[in-house]
Image (cartoon, rainbow, N blue to C red; front, side, top):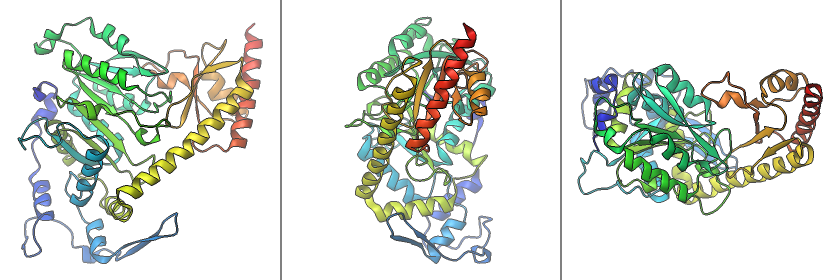
Length: 431
């Protein structure tokens, strides 16, 4: 693949910041190395020395003085080596990327990994590297508002691809792409889309997930039209059906998938640790963008996370994420039960296959915006109107999103009861 076709002018012009390169060199140097190169502060002047964390199972994690020095100091932009290695092994075990270990270590499509300040930071930097003004960018609809916030200011044109209860519709993707020919991807003056963005599991806001058959069709279309797939998958471990549906990364024989993972949904949202996996050429560009902005993900968060993962091992991690998925599966079932109890005949929905959300279409209400943001709020119940998840949020939408991650069963029961009352009042007033 010609990866430079996908880079915008700003990203193509970025060069490694030598001070960041020296930081990475120093992190890999033996203790005998004498360094008078980097301008790192002296950690002996920092007030923190050690820390101890009590885990939910009663066990304790200790960050000793040596680890604390690492946690308080600058780290390489790609991430702390031990954590990068642990996550690489996780990705190999779970996804087995075809290009993780090709014979040529300098293969431009070889799978690379970088730790980011949450997956949103990695996604934003990918957009900043790959999107130019006037580009056509393919995005599912409805879609995650964070992705819209990242891409809309870049001056591109969003080309929506329809979704249904099985996620992004490959037939509609093919219909959208039929405006162009595969040969257009080889022309420098063509406006053919280069990027496809989607949330493949437990989509926000829909809760829907792509089937393997659909992923294979979508990947084939991406090959035909030379698209890079931005696989934003924070809910991968929150799939409710087993076995989990294989990722786009696991299907990626060409090096055309940039995958964004997050620990926010399974370990901690406040630690802000995510990771991007994909072709070395593109991940290296994301790292260059990091060098010019955040420098690196929080060293303290990385050290704490690494200590936890080393303590758990792969078996402990698997056990924990299964516990998390089981919790949300139970909450999903309660949410569906309460929706059936109160909203039957007033609304329609389909069963979420993962994640934290129920996507509900209100019957007889063409636009939920005022009903949800004003009238429901007055009744002391909060949902999200569907228009928030559209490229043009001023467009009317008969949908709304309900989250079942925090609400108790009793709160879901009462919340849907209040909503049902509002729907009846709204429909009766419009007759």
